[in-house]
Length: 158
Length: 303
Image (cartoon, rainbow over all chains, first blue to last red; front, top):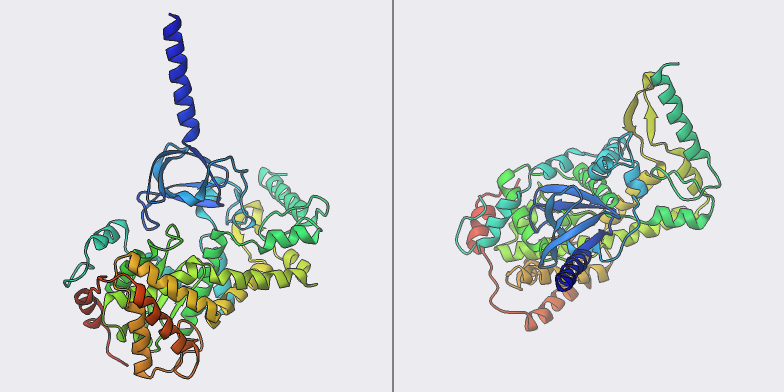
């Protein structure tokens, strides 16, 4: 009985240590969790400074994590810290275009072009260039396919 | 009083508290400072985090759009972006989202904005013969972004503004949220003068070019990123040589602002590349067939 109890306690201890060791805190203002190891993959969740994530695995400086929304995806390891980080949004994100300015929604949306659009309008600049390039980039699978093709024969970017 | 009217009143009270409080310290909405301690103000407004950097990048890109026409060629843009992303993945900021575009001009030039917007001109592509060269030039531009070359100048100018007498008025004039008619919040956002000033500085700093040291640094990391991606290390050397051979006049801003056969920047950059090639790994790919198919065969004729 005593031996079983000790074994259970040891097991619980190992699990607890393992869980603690796998937790990281978000150090940056806002970080997108993506479907793959690259900034061009689809965003599956967004975390903000101070949020905890659980590390599932790491590869080439990228970490696969589970967020507190139970979403899994990849994040660049440099955005995470091994010790707790005080929550806090930037002044910039607090001014996101919403009456829930300090909420996660505001943070995930950021100030998606609102300020730059205001600025461009005021200056008479063409904001259309931004909208066009943002919507005409290759997606994750296209880039993945490109990376596998050395390009020494014609093709590979259609 | 209706519920809407109460909520409007509450919002106004919050706004008054945000703008009027002199003793709390710290900051609230964008650019509206509640503290009077100059050190508090200085620290809060001179920091530029990534979301702000991206927004500054959009502002700079819109300024690029006012000077040049974007070539809205989807296959060409996608190809340039594929090469750009391959190089950016090897950069010091692989987690930043980069956007690539082609400018419809024969001027030989390339630009990068803060936050990862990279533009290359039709004239620049026309001087290239392979993908390794494109990778190196895009790597150079990605290098400026990855090494945050823009931000030092922007922060410096912002610091000067904060230190000047007009800062407080710049900070305080702006308001963030505008209560709408009937108490609804319109979600309209008005830029603070400080943010507009920051965007002005970002545009100026990004379009006037970089210091010679920064260009040298971007050359070095550009080649590094391209070779890490498996490209021939001679890409940038080949391009700089092609520019010199073509007798292209240097642009006033951007990639070639410091490159001129009579300017010490040009020969210095070429020599640096020659030196680098002596120790660079051999056997990188040039991907000339794909470049030929995707760019040379499809570039619109010179207008």
